[in-house]
Amino acid sequence: MKRHFSLLAALVVLLGMTAPLVADDSPSAAAAAQLRALLEERKLEAIAVRDPEQPGQFVAALYIPGSQLLVISGPYPVPAILDKRIAEAKYMDVYLDLQSAVSHQGQFFVMDLEANGLQRICEKDQPFDSTSKDGANLVAFDGNWAAQQLTEEAYGTRYTEDEAKYARMLKLLATVLTRSKTTAP
Image 1 (cartoon, one colour):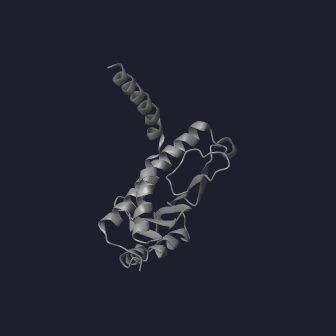
Image 2: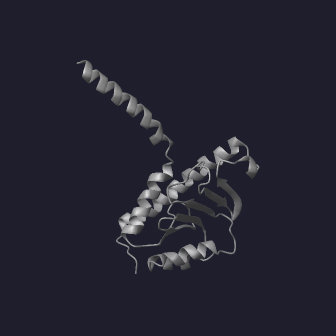
Image 3: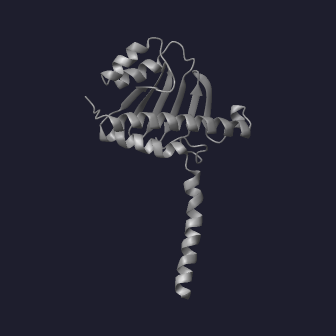
């Protein structure tokens, strides 16, 4: 009986120690892992979709295996062009068109280095994630908010907002891939 109690106590301690680790994972971490797996399975380097909840907005991602996930959302001046490219599975073209749009107004761009979801703070001497809005307003999630002329609170707020938006974009892209049989041409 005493042995069973000791095993149960050890299990409770172990579960207590791992629970915060799971809770600290960013919501985009699982979504990034799912999208990476789908892109690799279908041998795609890019994916794009019209955002069904944001009229006139598109979402596109470029995946560089083992390195990074670059994801952009934004409007495009001639939506029919991107709609046609998406229908033809020319996802890289959509990504490039969004990146090179004359106006960056309404754009949201994520550089997810290591393609593991948006991380609030990186380890010392490790790559860090960043986001930008409207082609500017860049925030590097390196933990050094003061160097970016931000308060810790403003940095945390920006991370929370950007993390939620990024997780949504990743889920949208993954949903498109799970519904289709899209593969690399």
